[in-house]
Length: 352
Image (tube, rainbow, N blue to C red; front, side, top):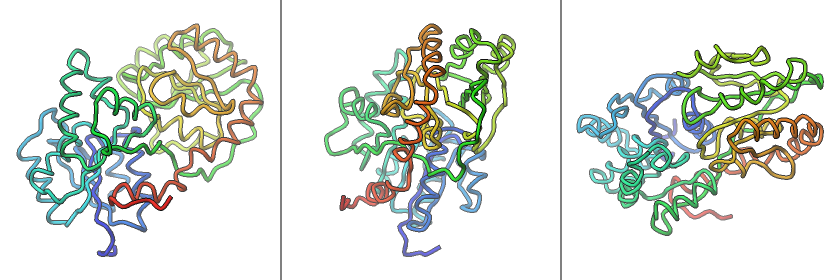
């Protein structure tokens, strides 16, 4: 690699398949010609294995809720040894480590990516404490990137992050290379892609789908997690469990994507489906509604009745929604935003 390129580190807690991990991979692939990337994670899983050519640094202490002095020392030494000038954090624990680095390396530029503000939706009764901690950590943050307009509102109104410290760069995904398959109209093939654990709610979607025959509609669930066994035990015969598929790229074999969840930032699975020109059925949480434009899908409440009604809308208007989805697909493509990310990471002004 060219040593004259900006040396940028990406730090994340877990490396398993997930939205923040896919975002990190996409960023590194997008900017690989412009930067010298480094990867730090708390475990060796899908993300680090996919990017093993970068020789990722594994710091297991990142998986612990409270920062560990040994982990902080390892991270500090790695940053200094590799002359990393910018550190980009994409998870809550990694974000704490990254911000604390400013105390040891004041010249380091630290960027925190929200991915849904877990300090609010995962905090429970202690959300006020996590929110306060996030506000204090913002003093050690050069820039906060909100991945949706909904996140930007939370950043401003709930977390009170100081003005000028944040920017909104809505999530995007690389332009697909595969085109939609020529699918028969029946059954309508729906896709759910996500981890089978909180905050995802595949149980509600399965309940709604159970009201349709196998000839009308099928639902393929791609993902694994602690809820899988219970879901499989009660699912009707028009629900197919495909398990976890790493780097899933078969969107073109489905008519639409359905993502029911209690909380989201701007979900990567829905973005990828949109980029492929698929209609969307999404919960009205986080920034999901920002992906619905000009008739390319439906927003629903998290009740079986609302989901069932939305499924009926989707089936009845599928042709129209598919046309609208294909027209809006370029709005989800990552490549046009390349310079915006580069400017955010380097602290330079965009010419746009």
